[in-house]
Length: 208
Image (tube, rainbow, N blue to C red; front, side, top):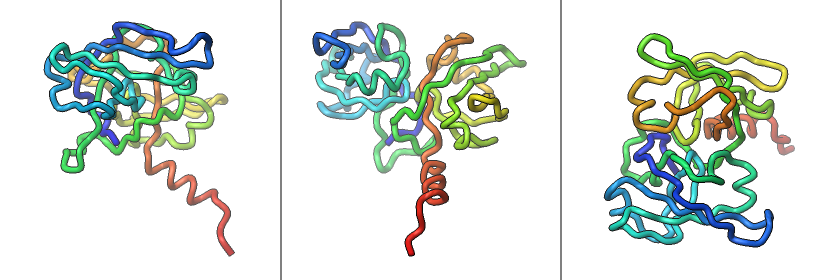
């Protein structure tokens, strides 16, 4: 489990195929901030842009680690198949503060940035979401964008899903990769965990 509070900015430094064709996944080598891996062990979970991954090798002194990502995960996420900056969050401990909201690290869908522009001291981020996720997104509800816990300020339903609006403060722009977003860019989305269970309870067949 995670909280959606980014604990470091990392960088995918290299991408290596794990097999001969697209049915195989990739091995990613990542550079983390200094001392980021001091409390990490082999097999620990680290979220990369909102996707929970397992540490397969690491060098704490060099702040470098690798993860293996399957073809299935690659097909359902964005931004994890090439070199570049990523948001990092280590799995939460049972006694950690829950600064954001309960995040599983399982990407539910891919959204597309439709608007990103300054408004006063902050920036407004609008994202078009897939139709299958639209019913889970609510005004003042929580959503995870590339691993960052955020609050939805507005929801407008459209034929293919919905457009949600988020206000990003300068701190968020400085300490995550969201400040580099551009219109047309794809982002990883995870809906609120509680909304999943509510939807299931309301739609599952009732026992006699």
